[in-house]
Image (tube, rainbow, N blue to C red):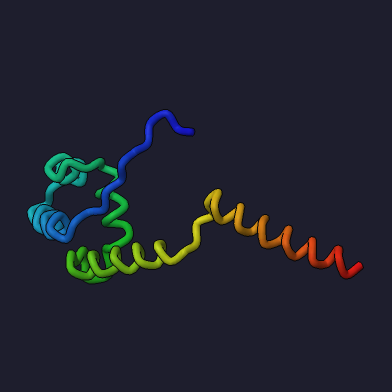
Length: 101
């Protein structure tokens, strides 16, 4: 278990518009991070993921982020409960097979 769990928060649509405005006046990424109260790597990742041929576009960036978040939510997490269910079902099937032999 980790000693310290980081609380990650996604950028809001408003923060994305702030990023866009600050980029237009040539604000450095580290200064944007300071203004928004996030880490510099957060800004770097945001720009890397969401800057296209037409530059950083906050509305499109937010739509893309929502799609990535929805796709991530759809994946099944291998929790302790899921493992227990798998073991239980597998054991039940094995017991039935043993009775046939």
